[in-house]
Structure formats: C-alpha cells, structure tokens
Image: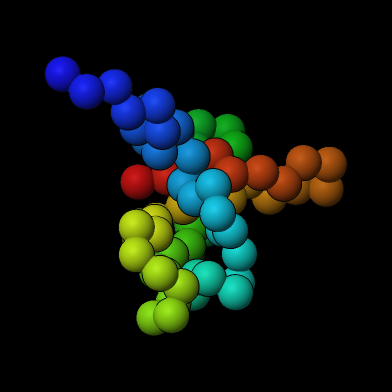
Length: 74
C-alpha cells in the first residue's frame, strides 16, 4: 500500500490550484434551497487550457447579504 498525502485533500477541496474564472467556466442552472439555505446552482467545467486534473461538476453557492459560501459540490 502506498500513502498519498494529497489523496484525502483532493476529495475535500474542489481545486487547490485556482478555482476561478481564469481556469473554469461557470454556467448558471437555477436557484434552489438546501434545507433552509438559499443557493444558486452552477455547472462548472474546466477551460481547455487550464490543465489536467481539474474539477468538473455542479456547485451550490449560498447567497445572502452577510455570508456567501460554497455549500455543496458533486
């Protein structure tokens, strides 16, 4: 068995090397509630020249005046 220290981190974080508009395309899908939390849902795809091993999936972004944060990703 081989220990890979970044293996667990890669499951927790979407992208440790730049999760931004320079590396990804964000397509708005809909508004949705996660329990009582209002979120915006986006499909996320890496841009062609952003490199290999990038996240591709869907995110739920919490909206509100006081707190904006990532709530879920799949």
